[in-house]
Length: 239
Image 1: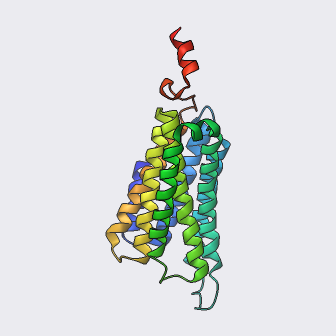
Image 2: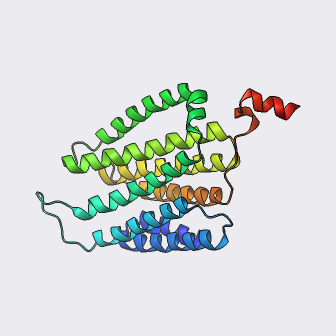
């Protein structure tokens, strides 16, 4: 996995898109095999995330073989590929929400949630506006949705960590941070800055993100630590 991941970064840095996409699918396939074969408690939603993401990478290979899209034509593969990645991240969001006690989270972290909501709106608008002049309206809309989904994922990962405060939630948060930075740098790489070094950076971040996602998948979901449990439960523990 380390050798393949290193080669993946090199291929991206050399702008070898087809080879990089094929190797990416191989790495994801190996990751799915490791997860299914060596994980005691398999999360169907996490497995679905990996599968959808791998399918998105598979579809992206066709982009290199399709004829050039004319100015007034719709690039269907662009929308399908990005739609699959959006769907994969939505699956992760659903997985995170399902393991939260939303009523308790809102009551304990309402100020933090409001702050995160404001930051999400600001960041998504700021990031999306960098490509407003480079994309058509449909492309801008899907990029806006894409950016919104990854920021929502980051927010729920942070909320999950603040609420649960354990190793699994911490690893998931770190993986999500690397994933979000990878996506932002990838956006800059394709639309803003013509710098091959960014290809290395976002690929490294992507590999690190999946590494943390896999590591956290080996931990089971546990209840929050005592610090986040209500006072009645604390009294029972002390007694």
